[in-house]
Length: 375
Image (cartoon, rainbow, N blue to C red; front, side):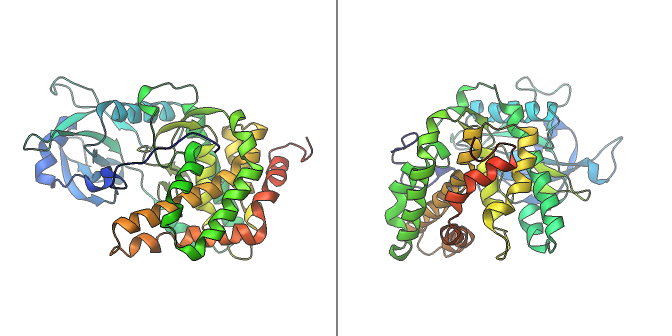
């Protein structure tokens, strides 16, 4: 079996989801005051953390949009080392010119401790949540904007900008070493085949043949390349709701909570998956990725083996997604949303199979990145 091994997780699919903090603004206000004076605006969505959108108050501040910040209360399952890794990666990406949130420091005179993190006790001796203050990136989530892109030109321009933005983050994290990045994770593309095999039985029997064909293409076209793929710390989740598009068309990269040491090209493959969910029915899948791939390659030059593996890795991300959704649905059979959320991934896998896209992609993407298809 190709890639890293993956062992049986805890009975709950992700204990971090079930242990998501549930503080009120009144309960976190004192901790937030470590960073300055703020007023509450609203809650922002998050699957596993809490994100309070706040506005700076006090002398020297007004209600302009630039004064909005995000107070993030991390899931109690995030140990201090992993939160430190997120802060390190944010600072490293920002220093390299990537468009992402900025880490804000605690005010002068704050209690001793980390300059960018405070602890918020859960109560009743159940530990504490790590908290950070981050800048706010205004705009529209790519997942909300993509369906409104009616012209090929607009879509290609945005996909190119997405590639450059994600590529800058991936490039910035290369060479970083941190012990918290070395971890077992269901969403690690280095163990995707193991995860799909482990969760295949949870998938509806009628859909398993499609899943099996996609996995077979993976083994045929990509498995031999895996030992030659570079590894580094990566963002690991630049999906269409972790990318925000501002009024000028710039793309910001949010949520560094899935950081991992894995294939360097994983960010490109994962982002490609979610872009392809928005590929119009009359546009060939492989060709529609070219603006994104070229944009990423400009900011984070890939090796030829990475380019050849890219599309199949994107397909396996979708395979992982449908398997994990099916597994979680088996744990929560009354939660219809879990299977509905997998609909775009199944639609994508069906198109991959019908178009023979996995076998076509390596040569097409090689040419797009400047290599002759026969090199």
